[in-house]
Structures are given as C-alpha cells and as structure tokens.
Amino acid sequence: MDMIRNGSGGLFFLDAPGGTGKTFLINLSLAKIRKQNEIAVAVAWSGIAATLLDGGRTTHSALKLPLDLARFENPVCNISKGSGKAQVLKTCKVIVWDECTMAHKRALEALDRTLQDIRETIRLMGGAVLVLAGDFRQTLPVIPRATPADELNACLKASYLWRHVRKMTLTTNMRVHLQGDLSAKSFAQQLLRLGDGDFPVDPDNDLISFPSDFCNLTESPEELIVKVLPDITNNFRNHQWLCDRAIFGSHE
Image (cartoon, rainbow, N blue to C red; front, side, top):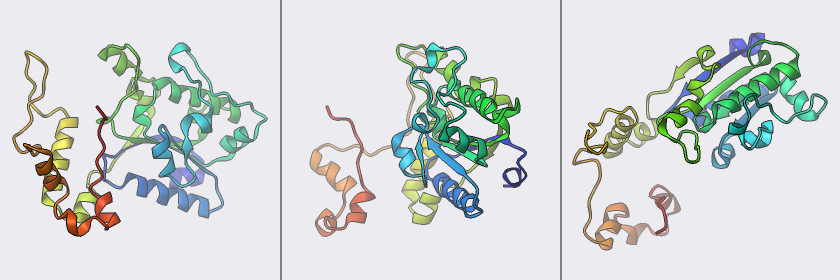
C-alpha cells in the first residue's frame, strides 16, 4: 500500500492456492484504494473470475489484448492514447490481474509496452503498481498442438519481466479452517502435494500414484449419492447445503 500511495510503482505476484482468501484480500484492497478516491482497475483472465472481483472485467475486454498473442513477437494493447480507457490506465493507482497464471507471457509484456507508451515513461509498467494473482499449480496457458516445452515457454515465469516480480504468498486454507472439516483439510493438503509434484511418478508410463485415501470408491450410483449427498431427504430444500455439494464434471 505504501508503494501505491507514493507512486513508486512495482510488480507483485500473490501466490494463493484455492481457499486461502485471495479474492477476499483483493476486494478488500480495491475497496480501500477506491475509498481514497483513487482509481483501481481489476481484471481477470477468465469471465467467472472477473465476476468475483468488485468492478472486475476480463483482461481482454479491459486491456484490449490481441486475440492471438502467439502470432506477434512484440504485441501491444489496442488502446489509443487519446481514448477514455487510456486515461483510466494513465491515472490508475493499481491494476490487479487475477488468474494471471492462465495468461500467455506476451499478454504481460504487451501491457508493459502499452503502459509505458500511455504514461510516457520507460519505467516498469509505466510506473504503475501491478498485482498479479493466481496459482501455478492450476491451469497454465493453453497452447494448441503444443509440446510441454511450449507450454512452459508461454508461462509468465518465462517472461523477461518475471525477474522484477516480488512474490507474496497466502498459505492458510481459510475455507477449510473455518469449516473445521478434517477430511476436507486432508484433501486440500493432498491437492497441494499434487500441485507441488510430491506424489511418486511411475517411470514407465509417467502416471502418478495416489494414496489409497485420496478418493472414495463406490460400486453403484446409489452409493455415490449417499457419499456425496448424505441425508439428502432432509436437506434437499436447503440451498446452501446443496451449493456446498455442487458437482462439476464433464458430460459423456
């Protein structure tokens, strides 16, 4: 916050696994800055993540990024210096970019060039404070017909700007902590181990070996319902109870 107040600028990354309170912290920071009558821009790589931010928009919509970043070596945002959008980016105190780990590295580089042009300075991000937020354990940039090397090369960590990033970390899973569910806590820890690459890998087929308690196996649809929706006959009218057990899966 001191760097935002004194206008010294900076590039930060908030490493926050799911449930650690990242969205709450971002919205709290946005509210504090806007309460002081300053401009704070909130963007996210995906539409769903953008709706969770106060005043959030998708990165492509707010910053006018090129649709095919991989085609251009030195892309820039499609924002003219005399536009209202350029005025917002010129005067804003901070830009918060959620789910940045899904973005191509050239998206970050395009924003850097654009801010330098709009603010007429060669300082990093034009002297603005940019807060990146996300989790590299989750989805990385999607590169069609790419090799693993191509995927890694497209990540933000492969950008020449990454060496300027100052990292901050959220570690406590507040969602699990507040619920007090020991099984949920164990599962969350196992997901972190999976993301950190701590599970053993079979050298013959590159498959991961999960521990026996990683998931519950069922023999029938009825048993699955009992596992996921216990006591459903007494709770099927309870919307919050149903939301806590929402299931996301592919349709075969």
